[in-house]
Structure formats: C-alpha cells, structure tokens
Image 1 (cartoon, rainbow, N blue to C red):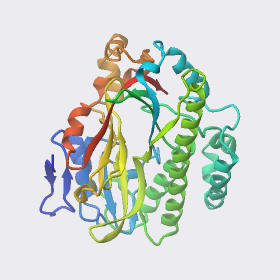
Image 2: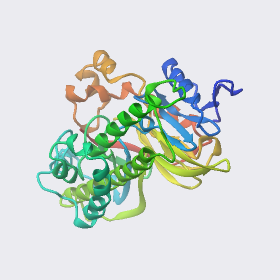
Image 3: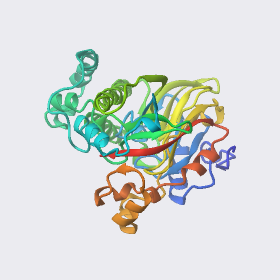
Image 4: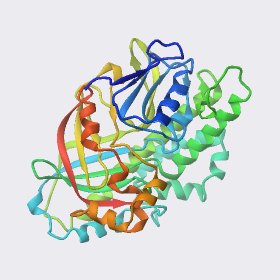
Length: 401
C-alpha cells in the first residue's frame, strides 16, 4: 500500500506529514503536527505503520533535518535495534523440550538490570570503544557521575539484554530453518548519553531566539560545540549498541552449541538499528535522518520487523522508497501503554496468548502480552510499497528482560 494520509498537505503549518497507515491515534497526530512546524525539517516527515505516541517524539517516525538534530527524537535507547542469524539446522533437529535451551541462554546473557560479573567482551571490541569514549568524557565529565561505577558498568553491560521490550528468540521460518533473533540497544551508558544531551538541548533552548512548539523538540544547531559533541556521543552509543548485539549473539551461540547438533551460521545475518541518526542524501540534499522506531530499507537491503511475543516476525528486503526516506517499520507497534496492558490483562491471558512458546509467563511480563501490540500482519500489509517479505518467522522460544 502507498501513503494513506497526509497531514498539512499544503504546507501551511510547516512540512507535510506522510503516513503509511490508516491506524494512527489522535495523540500521535498532535505530536507529529508539532514536529512538522520546526523550520529545519527537510521535505516532509514519513510515518511508518507501527506508529504510536513516544517520549520526546512519535515512535515510527522518520525525521530528516538540515543543520540541526533533536536529541529527544533519537531518544535514550540510542542505537536500539535487531540482530538475526539463520543456522543450518531444521526444526526436527531441536529437542522436544526447549526449557534447557532457554536456561542455558539465560545463564550466559544477563537480562533486566543484571550485568556480567566480569567483563566478557574481547579487548579487540573494548579498546576501540574506550579510545573513542575518552574525548567525550573530557568534554562532558557529568556523564561519569550519572552512571554508577562508570567504567566497570559500561564494560560489564556489553553483551547484556536489558529489560522492557528487549528479547532473545529462537524462531522457525517457512522452510523450518532455525533462526536466532535478538533486540537490544546501548544499555545504561546509552541511556545516560541520551538523557544528558536531551537536558542540555532544553537548557540551550532557553537562551535561543525562535519558537519551539514543545520543549521535547529542543535541538542542537549545526556549527555549535554542542551539536558536534552530540554527534560524536550518539555515534559512539550507536557503535556500542551494535557491538552489544554482536557480543550477545556470540554468547548465545556458545550457550546452545553443547545442547544442539553441530551447526554453522548461514550468510543471512542482519544487525540493524531502529533508534538512531545518520547522515544521508535525500531529494538532492545532505541531511541528518533520525529514525525513531524505524529501520533503513534501501533497495535490496535486508531488515528485521519483529512481531510481539507469540506473533510472527519478518525478514524483509527494502525497496528504497524515496517517500519513506528508504525506511520501514521496526515492529508491530504498541496499541496501548504498559500500564493499560497491566490493567486489562492477567497472567492467565498471558499464558493463553503465548501457548506453545517456551517463555516467561509470570506477571512481570504482562505489559508485553501480544494483545498490547498492533496486528503485525496488518502492519506488514500497509508497507508493501516499502519492503518485500523474504522470510516469515514464528517464535518457539522467547527470553524477556
């Protein structure tokens, strides 16, 4: 399907907002309308089918900016994204009881607020990150005070899952091939970097002429020291998130090898961000593209669109649609808040909706119940102009933070 709605089509109140779904709530429209008024938005804002209200900016939005970046649009889980690898194993080679596999992974990969007791990442991963981090800390020493046991924490969190909607899954595709898929970001230090620079942008906005329709839309202007420092810090956090997913995948593979028949990884391996900013060229201009809950989908580029726990997920190939700034959705998208999900559903609902999946079924993950999310099949259908489906995956094991 093509663009379903356009807000501000005539451009009387900023740039147009092009929406690739009919399923969008009033609060998201309000949030997007404010964003569209900013004078440095390039061409238009693109909105993906998994759209919903977010903190700072609308989840599922693609925001191209000229000579400015909005830290709150990138958010605090900088570089959050997906990693997927296909193994040369078939479903029939898996054990009937997947519980030992789940427990083996949980022993190797800390989840929630937990971290490794010792640093697990190799020096070849840590040293380049540490070298790039030092100049950032020299200019912004306040970051160190915001993270307990700073050096130990960011290093020991490399290769850990975190909480919320982050997950590790074992899946089967339409050919009964086995996949490992995970979702995580830049952990504690990424959160600290995001929070620190969002607050700095708000402080600087108080001393700047010009109207900002919402304090969450406070920005850094290109040419300022804060702009350069933020770009440096956000690129570091995005690199950390990428390495965090790679390290986790390494630990997962090590955990499951003793339990499964001998296997190898196939060439289909994907590691992509969906909360990030990058420098790109669109409609003849060099711009900063912020994808807030969206992945890049250039022509023939592979990406991952996961469904909720218990639903299907998709490996997709991008079509390079210019109207979406070569983007697509990052998942199903929530249709209700976590607090509302906890009010509406109970543990029995969770057990019923995750039947046949080896996963946590306790009250601590009720906010991640499948009914709290949009229908992933409808989300995929809305973006047929943006991507084509390569593989359809069904979860059989899920680990939540």
